[in-house]
Amino acid sequence: MPVRPDLSLREPRNITQHGWLARIALIVLLLLPSLELVNSVRAQQTPDAPVANSLTTSAPAAKSDRAGKQATATASPEPETIWNREALTLGDTRKNWEEHGVKFELSWTNFFQGVASGGLETGFAYGGKFTGVLTLDTTKLGWWKNGQFQVKVDNRYHDSASELTGSLFPVNTGLVAPKETGTATAVTAFNYTHIFPLFQPGDMVLVSLGRFDTLDLVVEPLIGGSGINKFMNVNQVAPPHEGRNVPLVTWGSTVAWVRKGEPFFTVAFLDSADSSTTTGLRNLFGKGVTMMPAIILPTHFGGKAGHQGIRASWSNQTVTPFDQVRALVLPSPNRPVQRKSGSWSVTYSFDQYFHELPGFPRKGWGLFGQAGFADRRTNPIQTFINIGVGGNSPFKKRPRDLFGVAYSFNSISGDFKDALSPVARFRNAHEFEAFYNFALTPWMYFSPDLQLVRPSRPRVDLAFVPGARLKIVF
Picture 1: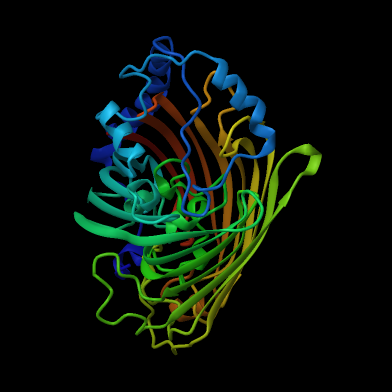
Picture 2: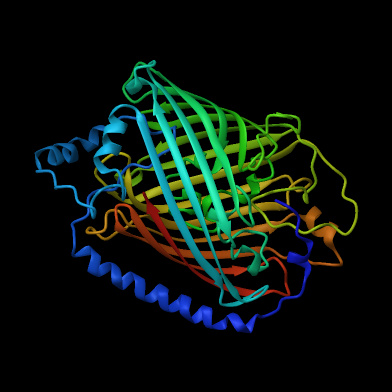
């Protein structure tokens, strides 16, 4: 992202005229969840609609889900109303399109978030994002079997609270792309995926080619969400130490080996340059190539599902720790820094369900964690740790709700610190986040969110960051 030297190096200050906004934000966060109780009386909620990327959308249900399916088949269907349909508009028309291979979703997400105390400055910010996704199923369209086209367009507008905290790490990932400030519209995904079925049910190889929003490629079940559906802080959305090599929007290809309906081995070859607001075709792979292999092993500790995974990234681009990383807010060095090539990162991740709900894709809640290391010569982050609990709501009558509580730690690269010293001295960063995503209806979600951020600057106090998010699916 564009360098903002004044953002990380200026002295902290308070904006007292915005103090009343902090009080209003806290009142809203307390009152809106109680309003949901009124809505819950209106209609009984149905199980959550599947939300998955190209690695899992075509996978069949596991054998353990048969009982749930039989129960669903025998139950009488609930009449569709505006309160239980999956989207606000085009109910029957949308279903007819999907049956013929055309699926379209338009969502509008609003963010109200700010720094109530501490941070670089106090104040609140409002911003929003429109996202449209068109998916074409070539089998249903009668073109050819096992193909899928996807086009995604994002529009973001207004402001993000990330600039108020004094942290290197955005507290609102949803407003990082396609541009971190102002108003911007861009095609963030334009790709084709072909499915090659293997011999056993649920086994297949998926090959994708085109333009990708890399946040959509996160396969860990309890994190991700692009800052729209789950956590908002970038640390819980995607490991920030991978941002040096993996741009937010870029061209490339991915190959995934799926076993029993879940990704087992994946590898991506990506253009190292971010092209969120450009076509990216004029100098394709001119900056370098990023390779990202990953392996994910299923586990069943205590009879519950889980995963253990490890992935790596490597790029031959020539960079410094201060070069553009759109997922981070970086200052400028006070002296020349030598450029290096061969940037790398390694990440271990796990998740372990404590409670599972019947159905496919898998739903439930459990423990998750990540630990990663990166090249200190090229990356502002040297070590990353993230651990938390999250997933679907533990309340039986709230199957659509999501929740999460997590802590993350980032150690700042020694090369990064040395290049800023003595003008600015950076310390390791700590972040805590908790959210609860209320499904007011199947097409409207309200999420109170609270973050505590200890920025990397020693002279910036702990930031208390309350916020709220409202998503509507049209």
